[in-house]
Image (cartoon, rainbow, N blue to C red; front, side):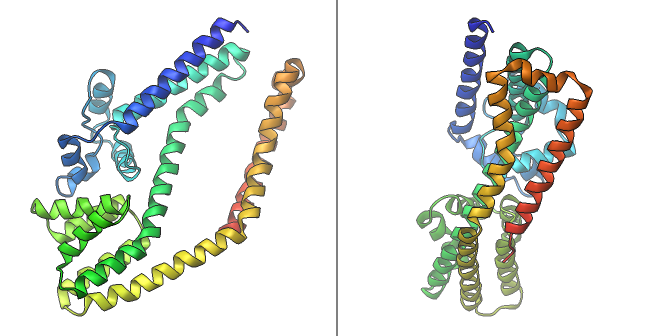
Length: 315
């Protein structure tokens, strides 16, 4: 393959990477803070639809998808992942990566790998979004027990519920400090307690957080000792986190084995193609080869799914 084409492809990928870093790390301005707060219930779904740098293609895409169900769901996922993106920027970025990777794979082996490049490019950002969202939610769950402990101590010291939440926003690490900071700021802007907690649960769909919110809502309605209730919930959450950590350690070998077994055929296919392209190309030129590839992918999926279910132990 022409080295110039390789250089062009690398430069395009680097440019996309720089754009990705810039969109991810851009500073949070007042408009973005106001948007993240949600503007009560309805506009929480519109987070990310009106960005700071909303110009050109991304603005047109935002207007085209505004109000559509998939755009609302994507906006919520972007907010849950805490990305400073708009829906339009995310979609344009996904299409751009799909186009560049499809072009690069086209020059590698014409039409054979174009669908592979397009699929990787388009679904790659969605996978990244899901991983970032899961990682942030997991960190939130791990910090929730300590946060409840801090709330309990603050309540016993005479603080109000809002003041206790403000202590969390100042003393705890991210992401839980950011989320409770938004709750406090919403309440300072006049949003009701129930709505702010519903917004928090929408951003952080955690079963443990749902239990905490239910306990706090019941206490506000019928009264009672909130500190004792939250103390019991905090102990349960901390024990659950501890047990999950032990289970994760015990099942680490099985999870890694599943990943290696699933990824090894793809790695070998790439290596064989780089060593002997003609040998590997025969797999794509014969209809029987496509059938074999389909069966192999199906069996790989079944194997990975089976290993994942075995190692996924609910607590």
